[in-house]
Length: 563
Image 1 (cartoon, helix red, strand yellow):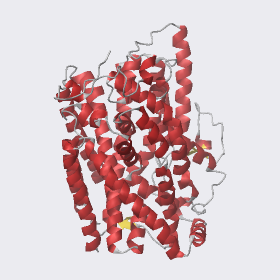
Image 2: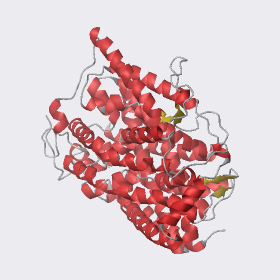
Image 3: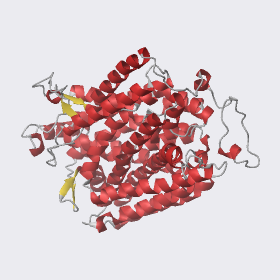
Image 4: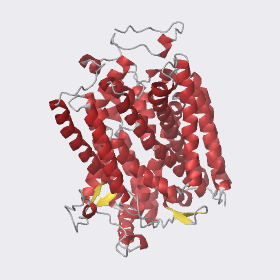
């Protein structure tokens, strides 16, 4: 049954951000939007506050808001992996993102694949990085739809068949239109509203709900009792634990570290970095962004709060199965009044649109610069590039919608876990290459092939008892299934490990060994277009390449000389 006050509150806020999305075309306008610097990177001049909201809005998605607490609700302590993952993330990327920003501004790189092309002079390696980025991003976009649909389903819009997806389709048509017109400025502006709403909703929830439900002691006791209960998906064993067990501690560690290494390899994460004005902006953001980790910790605890509140997942009428992603929306729906619940739903819904827009722009940039221009139209003008990127962003968005329409959403969640394994295989080509060319370009290709192939093979071995699938059921592999040419070094072990971590280690080993062989054979490593000084240039450096407004000759534009 539809609660009309909830729905009206949701629609009013959705209308506000829609208007902001179209207005954003004139916000912070520097030059012609018919240029990737302007459309795809917001003119490369976002300051500290805009970057903080943009990157935060990009990394902390609607799926984070619904899936992390849902994982605690169903499995317990393992869901807290998201906390150490974001805690170690920013120190790890502090220096690499500065170097990437500098070299990209000096040479005008728009994507990480652009950097790889310039660093190694290899169009093949750049193509591999671009395709990997696009493939890993697609299920991430689809998962934003899963979060938005969870909200719509909780509000009573839960029909079966195409009608059940119609509101989602309308929302993404609107998203596609204002992203097409305004580019990266649209999600950057909307991120302000999204993050403020999220902070208000979560802070109210973590103070109000524990007081209402008897305090945190009662909440953890309820969670502990539920986790001790056996379930069909756990094979009659306890379904989880509020403490890590001997079998999932290694998974927890490798999943946290692997996820931290992977996050800023995603093209949408680097888009926010490259849109920043300078290195000082990025330094401030790497220091300030852990504030979101605090928010994430509070949000995760709501999974336990939902247990104490007796919340149950809403059945998805399209599949006939309970949808665990509805746990947090259902908690808000049952514990708050209609008006506040509607505001909370809008926060989650808008939290889906911001990252979906940035992800589609990042994927479109990769397609345009590293596939379309490299292989299909080498002489493309900036205007043709921007037009191609706009069209590609539409294809990506509606491809994600089609994915939800025709594929079980549970499968897309599995694919998101696989997405981290996929994007990790670009770490040697992108992150390590920011510091050294000791790894040979052909060795990087070989490492990617072996790491990706082995990772996919290991993922194939993982079943999903929740939906009866025998393969590709997640990213946690028991060590007894770890095989090397038929040899099982950990036979009989029930300890689990994150597949992405294993595949990355194999990738690096292959890259190091093959590099040594190729160097011994004096095989050419390609031409490096970059210079050591390029990695330290800041916004006032004369080495920077002019951005779109200077190139386009906009009256009054500041032309920054380039060597």
